[in-house]
Amino acid sequence: MNQTVLIVDDNPDVPRFLQRLIEGELSVETRSAGSAYAALRILDEGIGCVLTDMKMPGMDGMEFLRTIRQRNTSLPLIIMTAYGAIETAVESMKEGAYDFITKPFDEERLLHTVRRALEQQRLLQRNEDLERRISQKEQETLFVGESPRIKELIETIKLVARTDITVLITGETGTGKELAARMIHSLSSRAGKPFVAVNCPAIPESILESELFGYLKGAFTGANTDREGLFQAAEGGTLFLDEIGGISSSLQAKLLRVLEERQLKPLGNTTTRSLDVRVIAATNKDLERSVAKGLFRADLYYRLNVVPVRTPPLRDISEDIPLIAFYFLSLFCRGLKPEQKRFRDDTIRLLATHQWKGNVRELQNAIKRAVVFSKGEFLTPADFEISAPPVPDREEESETYGSDYKKERKKVMASFNAAYITRLLRRVEGNVTLAAVIAGLERQSLQHLMRRYGILSTTFKK
Image 1: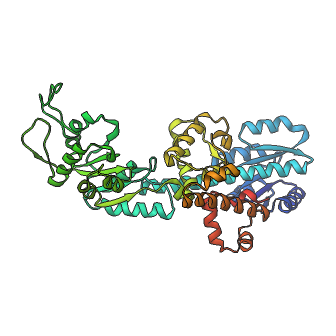
Image 2: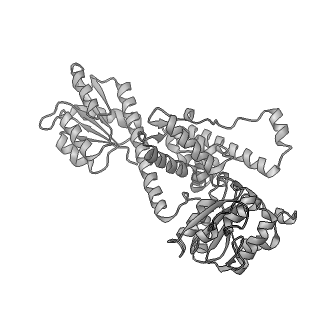
Image 3: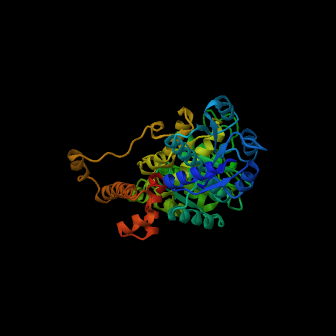
């Protein structure tokens, strides 16, 4: 990301002074131009921030500002003006200038203003980069993420989609099981046909059978007309049975018959009809355990579980949280139509280290709520009703040691890793190479851990 500062002034002494000051204090590159026309040619080479004088021969600072705004709406431009020209500086702010500073310069204020402008541009560029990556992902898949688990999931879905076999999707609540089913359908030869989703627990057991298979008039009390079932509605396409682990044993038997015979008999009918529907089922339950307890038919389980697909919980793909968060932020800003909002770096770190018990769905709802209720341009930790995990006290430790060892060890290691890397990068002011040497790690290994915990080296650079 470009952090070069362009200084524009027809008095050559001003750029020389500012270049020494900014390069020495902010450790960023600078360029200079003696006129607005020369500056416009340099802008094409990539600039992070512009400092320009107001009064210049030819094109003055105001016209220069308007020209830049026509070419680049986000580039921050700081006006330099004499103390007595405050009204002109205020007018420039209305035209879209980032800020103004007066001559003679207050060096601390100048450096602070330039630093803030560069930081804003860095955040804007990073958001734009993430939006481009998300756009590319949307063209390829419904899932957002670049972790090994997500890549493996996407590859499995692509392979399964080429076939017409039954699929069982397992995963915790909120991990995107229906999303996986929709992706399988959209990539399959049935993509142009219906995708019918059924949330099995949401339909009373007494009604679910008739909803799935349909019925004839007079089949039962209240059946006043013939009704097509959801299997028939999905003809030629895909029927998605969500949370199938909760259906009754009698319905399990009828569903097994349909899957084996590929034929359907509506309630009240004595004849069957052939069926061309792909079935994808999903559950957040351990069906193998349910089979062992006699709560789920073993033959139906094996019929459904021809190809297992598992959607990972968010804690296993924590390195994807920044990308997922930016995706939802972009989505909600487009859909809810507030002003475009951005994440602060400390907000991303908080989201990446929080334990999302509701997985992606909980993260999605938290971001949507923050977009609706936040007042500023940047989303801060205060906009989220979550906090960094506390350090356990002795009472909490006694409870921890009484729970599952592997889970608790994973939590403690995650907390240690995030805290250790944060302290280390703060100590070396964001120098990843030096941090890797001190930690005794390969640079790539340290970068992988930083991505996993949402830690950005630029946060610690001075």
